[in-house]
Length: 330
Length: 270
Image (tube, rainbow over all chains, first blue to last red; front, side):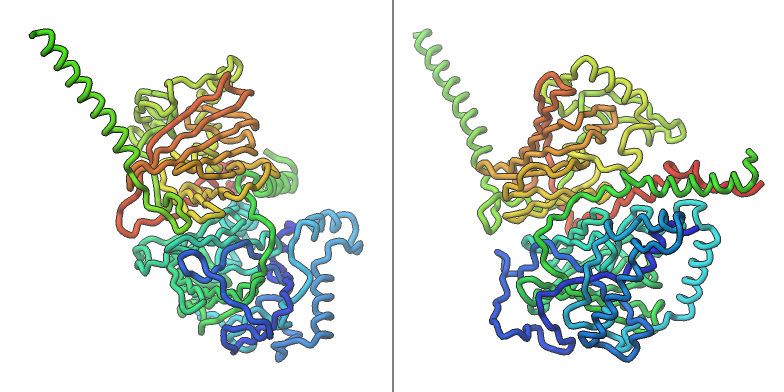
């Protein structure tokens, strides 16, 4: 029996954002296409100013769904229909299914922060390269590894903490910064020589040095890897390596080289772009573009592990079910 | 003649003493901290204490550890203590709670479970922490468990909700960063020795750069449910000066899963 949030995890990348009416053309230069002139604000030490709290919630999925193949951009009508279908898919307030199904759906949209819209330029996927909007095929080794992990997790579901997701174990939300069903807020703080990205979930401050120092020694592998940043014009480029083999993003492995780009394109928007470069896992690199919208909210404490009753209760429940299935024998 | 020379010597000695005092004070006052673009002392950097306050903030001798198999590696080192006056002024009932905490510390110390350490304990955990300082926001990121706190420098108002790390409002008093921390829950301890607080804890921290690589840190503790008066702890924070020093991960949640969930694991069929 799947816990409600396993279903949620399956639709985790279907989320929503509002943009301030900004149309972002993928191949265009960094300047915006609106008529109003806008100067890039700068911090005290001359960096382009990315400071503030930003949300990347959006209904646009990471990958283009099969039914939208061949349609990188949607018309207004197609977008409205698509949004309606997505919201219906995640709607837990339907009354079809009976009481047990209702209970399973109690982890409903009240708890979520998906937003209600696609990205403003009505792209049908966050992935912009390859042009089909889908993650490129995995290498044979990666396919094998992913299949084995999936099989193991299914076979041994609820037997111990290791088969749960990193979110459910309260280890981390991870990289890159893709929208999820909630806690889509990130705070950026810039001091001389570094940019810090504070993720609300699960309280992680990624302090990125800009001083050109090398990465940490190759023998140090971390869940969030090891990040280094530099400016290219008005774009912050962050290079992350040293990922732990325990971390996988859509099939990536410890050789993952993640390149992220942050560009403030207007007062309300940072355009965030990430490239997954991992030749032992993916047959070619792939890139997604996710608008981050300024929000007046603060980032609050997310004491995930301290309140993680769910993991203990799911394990205890599974043991109780096994016991009663075995006729209550001790 | 003898009296006059004694008088001279006295004047001389007093003069020397005055000069000595003056030069000590002058030395402390003469340190001019490097400043950020907005003119404040620059606290940016990675810092760590060199004391055993996390074991026990009061003065304490060394003693055997709780886990026999760890031998000397699990034993507790001594410490002169960081509590000014040496004694924590517990109310009588609270002292009983502290003693119970101490007796059950292996089970009940939140650090054992990789829980957030709260303030001021986060400052003197045996791991480095980094200060990222801007005019409106000062972030403190602690290597232990990736704990992080935001110090709001723009009058954020009262804590909207209780939290483990509290709600921090900061301002400058001359060259001292003063941080007022409220909105704590009652779940953190001050150390591994069971020193605790209620949800009425109110901490005021003071950070002063006294030399290029040393911050003088003070934390005033107020909690009328637990202590008979306000009390204070103080300690130096030392800058990590190694080239390219950085925080690394200590994401300890993974390390305590067996401890917390091991008894709920499916046992292999016999």
